[in-house]
Length: 183
Image 1: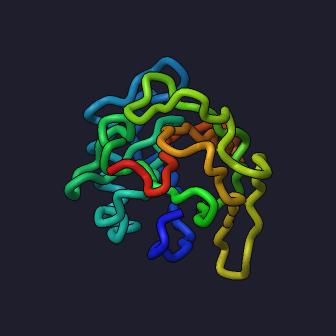
Image 2: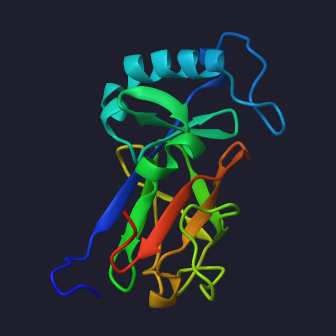
């Protein structure tokens, strides 16, 4: 590990846009893609109910079962913003803490397909233990789940995490591991 790195807990907020906020548009579920109209409606809802999200590139905005991210104060599909939105986890020290206002489970993590960052020989699961990582609630109606530390062997690899929400939707944004992580 880089000598001057201080271990961090990377906090990732999961914000679920209610289906009603999409104004009867067909939901982007399964093979139904996220449209510009979905993004526009979700962005308007997030700005009204959680305005701090537009300054948090690590936040995951869930629309149907698709992940989106604010990039330069505009909501875009997570895969478009991955160079900016991927959490950069130092191996052997950092952990990820996901947070939502509803229960969720981190059900799996695996190497991302068509990854921007990829190294031969990296493990399929970068963590020493888990997933699954179950969320637990607190008195403020916030639910959190924490990862274990990532293995050094995961350096330079982009991973996709699968998050199951309490209504059974599955969302899968990315993160990258390294020592230090790739820029």
